[in-house]
Image (cartoon, rainbow over all chains, first blue to last red; front, side):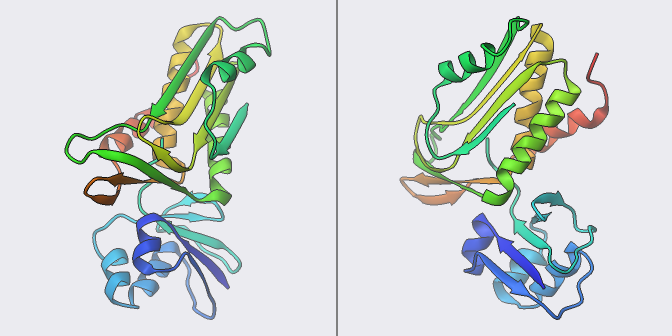
Length: 83
Length: 154
């Protein structure tokens, strides 16, 4: 099972802040994005287009090629704008 | 090292004093304060700062540790606020202390460049024309990238 969190613009557009995903073989952050994009509409528009979507695995910044494991907390969000 | 992620405002003078009182070897104190600023194209009333609560403290701690490792400084403070902030309010404070100004200045700039691209905060501006998510600035990535090029502890 993966816990997936969405922040900022993505949270608003998807209409959810978090969800649990299980029973899907996903190896990397890129796999997760691709799988979510198959939901269509806003999901494919945000995740399968040329828009930049950053990720964190267990509260550490990650890249598309990073591996994900059962029990991980994966966060997807637009580039950060703090400071 | 003091790291705080908080809704409340902070007192810059008190934070600097608290950091300096810890030791007498300090000869240089550098501070940076980021404010909610106006935009003349779409006048800003304030902004909502969202963050990834479980990650922000951890991210800022990593940034602070990296600065202590890279630069010849004694200590530092990073405070970042979240929630609703009105125009002119303080958003972020970075204070670095060391023997001499050069390393202290560099460490302070490094922390801000790092924080701008690595700490999970997002700004949504409340303007007279509606609410707008702030887009990331390419200059911030460039500013961050320059620190990976080597150097820094002399």
